[in-house]
Image (cartoon, rainbow, N blue to C red; front, side, top):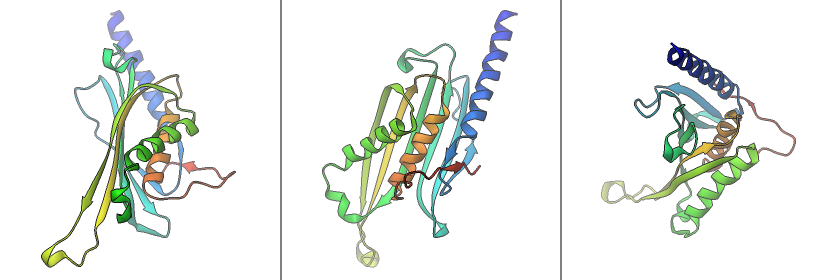
Length: 193
């Protein structure tokens, strides 16, 4: 009997956190859509896909990504907590960045700074920064080379403000997609769901 109550309380708590995450303020260029979360990783999960659109052309997508929030009251050992955020952010960059040896470190620093600026504290972080260079040949030779950057990361939020983690990741999305930072004193709007 106590176990059923605990499960209901966990589900209610998770629903409250999801509501707070959905109310997070993000830039209007970032469009979030709730999508089916991964199964069997945690008893509670929610996932959002994201597109960063060009503020001058809503049809031009500058970047894509995903934000997954997992909750397991049992606290899996590898998580170092009961919550886990799993993300990626991907965008095409200028082709001359392909050979920049610091690109991976810069991509990771964008994540760290975005979370810090949002006030999102965390532990047990892990991730990768990948660059893919596309070169065209033969019948496609007229296409210019392109570089795609992808930041994949996971971390365990500290504290109760899970929405700050979505806000930090949203800033990363916009940075990777090449949007300039918001000017001082300008606030982001509620997310577009």
